[in-house]
Amino acid sequence: MLYPKFYDEIETIKITDELSDILGAFENGAIEFSYLDAVKSAGHSCPTVAGAFLMLKEGLKRFDSPKRGEINAYLKDDITEGVTGVISNVIAQVIGSTCKSGFHGLAGKYDRRGLMHFNADITSSMRLVDRSGKVVDIEYNPNGLAPSSKMSPLMQKVISGTAIKEEKEEFKALWQERVERILKFPDVVITIK
Image (cartoon, rainbow, N blue to C red; front, side, top):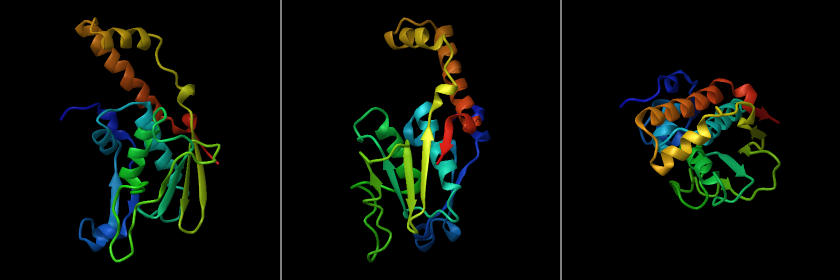
C-alpha cells in the first residue's frame, strides 16, 4: 500500500480502553491511532480528516488519562451538515463515542452510545467532556494555511474528467501538500479553550 510518507511523521493519538484489555485485544488497554489509521477509515486524506484528527490529538492531551468510551463529544452542527459526518466518524473511531449506534456495553458497563452529541450549544468546533466533568473546547480553522491558487482550477478539471495525467498528479500533490502543512502546524489551525 503506497501513500504519502508524511502520514508516518504525524504524532499519534494514545488512549486507554479498559474494554480492550478485558477482552484481550490490547495489553493494558493501550491503543495508539495514527493519521494513517484515520485515512484508512475515511478512505481519503483531506483538511477535514486532518482537522478531526488534530482536534482529538490536541484536545485529549488536556485530560490526565483519557479513556476510550468515557468521553462525550459535542459538535455544533447537525450530522447531515457539511463535513460534520466525516468528523464524527473520526471521533467514533478514535474515542469510541457514538450517538445511537456503537457498542451497547457488557453488564451495564462500556456503553459507547449516547456519547456523541450534535447541534450542541457550543461556540467551538468540538467540545470534549470526560467523566470527571472536565471540559475542553477545540476550535479548528485551516484558513491560515490556504490552498495553492492552482488547486481550484485543477480540481474542476479532475472532477470534469478533462485533466491530463500531469494535471491529475499535480492536483494530488498540491492537495496532500496542504494536508501535510495543516498536520505539521497545529498551532496555526487549532485553538484550545
